[in-house]
Image (cartoon, rainbow, N blue to C red; front, side, top):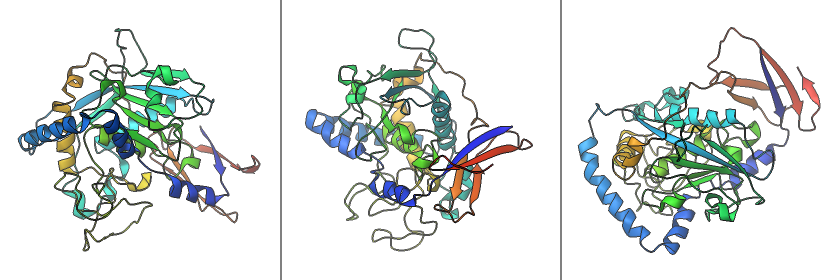
Amino acid sequence: MRNIVLAVCCLISILSNQQIAAQRCGAMEHLHQQMQLDPTLAARMQQQEEHANQFVANYRGNESRAVITIPVVVHVVYNTTAQNISTAQIQSQIDRLNLDFRKQNTDASSVPSVWQSIAADYEIEFCLASRDPSGNATTGIIRKQTSNTSFSTNDNVKRSANGGDDAWPASSYLNIWVCDLQDGILGYAVSPGASPEVDGVVIDYKNFGLADISSAPYNLGRTATHEVGHWLGLSHVWGDDGGICDGSDGIDDTPNQGDSTYGCPGEVLVDECSPTAPGIMYQNYMDYTDDACMNIFTEDQKTRMRTVMETYRASLLTSAAGCNEIGPLPGDIAEILVYPVPTNGQFTISIKNFLGDYQEYFDITIYNTLGQLIAS
């Protein structure tokens, strides 16, 4: 039996306000801070860009490359019990990254036909590290309680001296920090070329893995997919040009786009930069759409990520960090949606991405936000 407890939230304004207030990604804000602190960073990033471009042509069309596996260490830096997320939630994020970066996500079939020819298996997967920097066995998860009630994009979460937790060597691990982020930021990442002490990804604990429905529409683990994309050298699809169509993400097969997209349009969407169908690619992981609306990296994005792995992050290809078992999405962790919210007493419960035995039955208990039993 699967026991599922759901809370039906009757305050739709909370969800709407969260969507409006959420700054989906703080990567650009963080980059500007780092450039002020390190005047050489821009030059290093430019060198990295030129170096990567030299390799892109050599990679494109080569289908014989092996799948790259990246060892991950997750630093859970928490102040409250709620911020100390479960191991199951952490594993659900690793599973989500693997589904998305291997094009095994169940919503890949919903990629519009016009984009199908440029969507591919990205041949990158992730695992929780099995060895720490000293060679000892590890779960790949570090838990550290802090007196800090929250963190910002200033990288304090990456420093023990500032209430965070120090990075493990970036040459051997993808460091992911999970904490309470300020100002509605869901996550941020560094680009290739950053200092090893801050190299990695930071995600708000409410948006990491398959999270509580109260974190919707950012509760399906796609924030980490987006931020890891940055860590692997990808830019936002609109080029961060302020909507004037002059910027570029440096990727040939993503259409020009004026600005970020929120929500889930669900149809062809055009703007001043791509005024005719098929319009912009708001389904791309590097846009700002809802988790349930993201479902694609392109072939050229794959090429850029693989190129970064084989150049600036090549040491990870021979990392001794090892892997704890990479498994499928656990059967008792699923995407559970309840709608409409608020409800007049009639509502639908949708259970998606459940990979367990479909012959089992579910015991579902419904509570309202006051904790009162509604139905069972």
